[in-house]
Image (cartoon, rainbow, N blue to C red; front, side, top):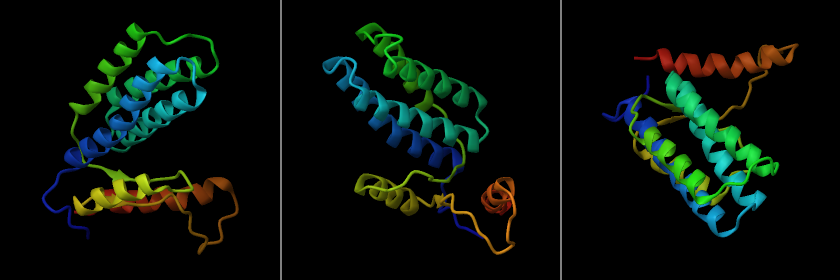
Length: 165
């Protein structure tokens, strides 16, 4: 049984969103200076994607939908299908602010590799706050035969932790 150190999953979710929103906001502000920079757009899109995943874990459907729309907008900008102008960036920043207002319990399942120092420092802060980090590393003890069975090993581990009291 894990000790959440007095923090609710909403508080941990908010901490994750605040962390990702820092990256998201910085990237969007850089977009204003470096219009069309695919690298900067990718940073913002990854942050929105992480927020969507965190919202999905805590079953915050509105947050999932909002982050998904933010992702779609950024992908369109990456493909040069749209150009993000200051007014559009302001809309994305306001949408990001909505994410900060939500609070729910959170188990983080990082899947991106390799990890950099910023990732590790943010994970350390979340661990110190009582978060549970469950890397999306499948187990092969049961000798899974399909990709679905491999994925199920990760999902089962997350569900085990969600159901713990």
